[in-house]
Image (cartoon, rainbow, N blue to C red; front, side):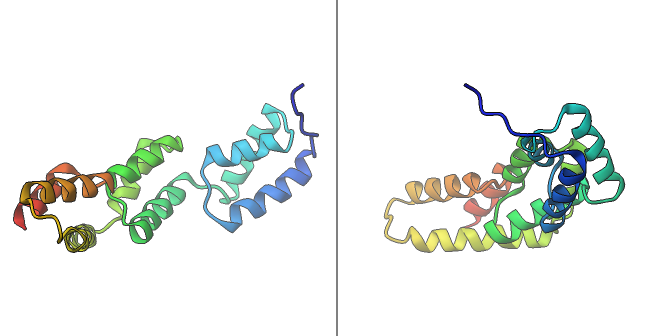
Length: 157
């Protein structure tokens, strides 16, 4: 037996979804899922989505820039990981490019350098220089930094 949610109506759903969007930047997919969770039908969801976009509660470009900036500043993610996650959230390529370009190159390289130094300090007990470089490189690539940049930094140490 499937669980069905009761349709709360477009008026109530619009009021709730506005607060949902004001609380934090959201992408279209998240909002669409939330609206379907309110038991709304496809045409009602599409109507409310267009209304949210029209009234500027929902803006994919703004979401992408906020998401990329937050993941970079707080989690120190690289552009590759940010791009992958935005793609998973079904954000358009245009918005992804705009979001990634909003990250300053100087800050990006500085953060990568700091991460490399911190990880190198954590790997000080590793005697084998090749194993140390390999672990450092894997860590930085795993954080989502581009292989070319990582290789440049690792080889510079």
